[in-house]
Image (cartoon, rainbow, N blue to C red; front, side, top):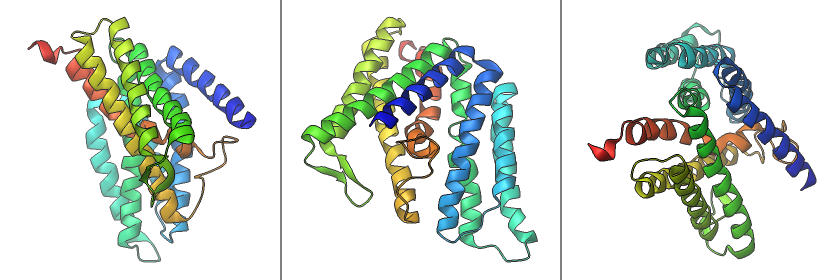
Length: 267
């Protein structure tokens, strides 16, 4: 527990510093995490016997992060080009590629790089620093609430075949914590119709954070490993700690951009 607390404290401190600095400092910090997490993903893939084009995928992933900051409208075309090249790369190997290799290439680029890269877009919005902090606070509230309530009162297994320790009670309380933080943040930031916009924001972050957690658990279970890595003492790998952020990054960006900043509810 001590190692978990120390590493979590250091990690949160560095994350807050990167969020505060923003710009290319934030891109650089996020790039380090994403590329480490992506290597962990490919280690899981190799444990299943697949042979992805890891370094080519890492190169396209780094380019995606740069483009998200410098020219975000080019991100989707780059994703399409990158996915195409990752599929074609298998044609030029001495050993024939497989469907699994092709799927691992594309999933590695999409899941482990493209989705979390939306944190850069979120930071670049008006009030981006506060929006990013609110997103992280919702995730932290959800994780902490689900962990302690699930451990103390959890009886009903949420998904025993994927993550035996998660419970329905923990999931409900964790999502409730995310909603509470979303409401508080929306009120403090003076969002229009804050009980609606803030409540929905917290609900989305809580639900998609949980789904991201379960998805990474599914990957580990299929690969037959307990942790994705050992970068963070007491926590495992980057994917083990960042799984809740992967699906929530684009959700938070598009929701904030469309329903909060564009005042969708007042149209």
